[in-house]
Length: 231
Image 1 (tube, rainbow, N blue to C red):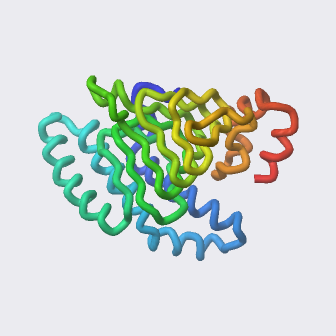
Image 2: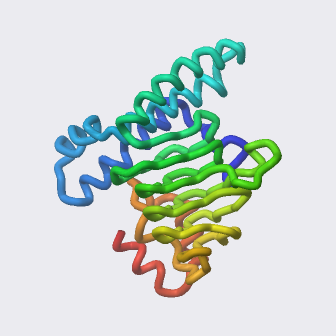
């Protein structure tokens, strides 16, 4: 599970760099040259939306004195609201989203004050946030996602739900219970189908040398290793 703030340990510049590199690496994997891949990224409104969130979050959590950070963060939030009208991406600046976040497709996305690990992927029409029945602090009634989690199109994750690292949430699923590490869930309500994980869905540069991912692969069910290597 992510630490107290998964954004800590990565500077604002490094977090944005890792976000962008997810797109560049994916384009290169699809056969595009590094130059063409680099040119495509600035044209993606999703990248701009996430970068604006990063700036807003950094201002709110890292600038001292805190009062100044809240003022600057509020101004940045205004820009984020304007961007959301064009990008369809609405991210609460109080959310803690680890570096390497990727939003591959167009489609409205809502992310509340959640905690999310590194190298996760949110598909289009995803909603992740506070549960409808929550009557306590928002941070106690929102999901916590681990590292390398893939969330499919139309999925809804709301309330105090924990999704383990390397899990895969299928399209149009509605989560009502926790998902174990490497769990693959699907349905309404979502049910656990396997422990094969998100290894074939999450791609990022250097993933084969990532020690945490390697450990997760070693714990995966037999046959997963070969499949993941093809990603």
